[in-house]
Length: 469
Image (tube, rainbow, N blue to C red; front, side, top):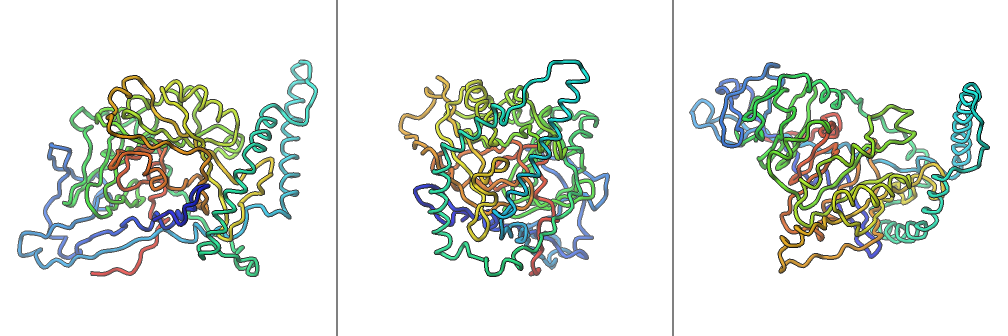
């Protein structure tokens, strides 16, 4: 379970435990036996076709639990390799910015903003336009300060209760006396595969016909596929164990019972073509902000582009919509006042993810004007007339409480959000269909979409445990 403690204010989560409870076990036959195997097949729903990889053996899916029927392979030895996520990627033992260094950090940001202001003023002067009087805070900053003032007590009091429970149980632990040891930097794996660029390249590949675009189901048998097979098609690991794929020379682990579509926003039609609707849709849009512009870390979408996501066609009656939102008031207002109404979604609650260290400190000072230790989630329900008519009268919809907190130690990898499956399970029907948009990892039982949907499934983020036969 990823839920360590549940109290009235919310939940204390263990993100690492959630990942490692997934059965990341890769089943492989001994290579000498497997060398005698026949050409393998890929199952496309009801269609059965042979497929040979243009990239050779390195581009194959390797996994099998079926016992070979012939005598030559009957004695083939099965190896089970288990993988776990790198625990040091969750080793956040001290704040990113301590109280002592907060002033220095603030002054650095103020200097950077001042340089930007000077550049703007020079540009204005050159263009011969009248220069506006500088003010201490713009309206967006004033709105953010007012919002923080309203929720500050909620964040502080609620998270304190959950943190104290975590310290008492031993899940969280003080390391103040070992500060030097705790402050050792974590070496992050290199981002060796740019999936978003691969999606852009895939647009120039020959178009697949309607039959070829059917869901690619990876059955219990071994399967060989080309890289082109993965683009613009839903891929499903129907087995109860992990499969490994090699994409452009990079290896990725696919958890059991998971489905994904690797594409950008221009190619979402495979999700619509499968005629499946979802009971919960989690959305983590690539919001525009100064940090994204400066770092050029990933491309962002405009509000109009986000509005055009076909959520109404993907949502089942009374679908629960959960959208991650940055602390910019512009984005919060957009979701509540424009995005959700355009999708016929009614806002029902606003939650917050509070990021802490393993010793229970906020990762950023709570009152920092630049970085906050929390992010928002806006929860809503599809409220179309048709939805209310289709809803089963015998099914009582559990009301979603407002102002809940999700407290957890964040991953060192950028934008690796905590899992929501266990905190949302009481608010969706049993065995409900779940979809994550703009996902960067896979989950059993979920469909995931995005142009970086396999990012955190990369082998570099996992460690292989001792093999067993």
